[in-house]
Image 1: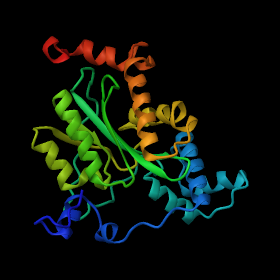
Image 2: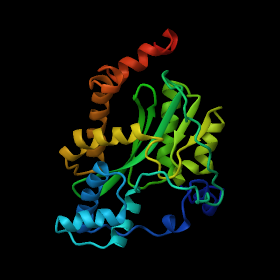
Image 3: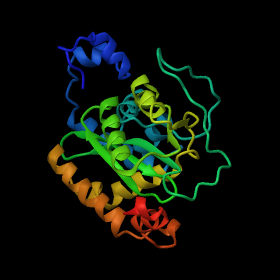
Image 4: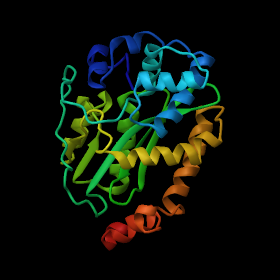
Length: 275
């Protein structure tokens, strides 16, 4: 969190967190009911057709008699933190003070817990408004190690989830994320590097690099979020807490030979760590 009373200037604090100064000084304007409904529909379409960009989503919405322009769809996608997923040429440059790390997992066999962790952020609709969900997931076992909900898509709640995962489960050899500003920020990458963790980042817009996290988001939304119109942030946290407990302990996973993530994660650890 940004502390105006801290000895470190606010400009330096927001830079370390990967934020713009305007995001701190100017409160965001409320989102209209129409835009909230559009964002919910865009979110569902994005889960079904992750390759669809703003133009295709606009055309899909028009076929549903929802008349909206491509630019407005693009604006809402940016607010939601989503983009069309496909391999793009590397033409982007990191922001000031941000470093992009190479993707380390290509052709790598990952079949042991705590070898590779991954982290991502997704948009969670509520009855009125929305929040963002960040989760740390063990790659091999699909176990959700920690998660956090936030009303803003900033670095601090990602760091909170990372700290909890490291405290409870030790540390992985490699940590994989996308190239979002939260994960390329100095504060986040330094938290990994200071723990001796190798940093890996997906190619921008690539659906293949972190596809299993996208499948987790699909499960979370269709099995929990879309079934419950959360009335408040606290209600969203309660619902997600119940779901992740179910997901880890009781939900069989097809990629794990119908075992649960908890079974595979703890059974694969050395006895002292599993205890």
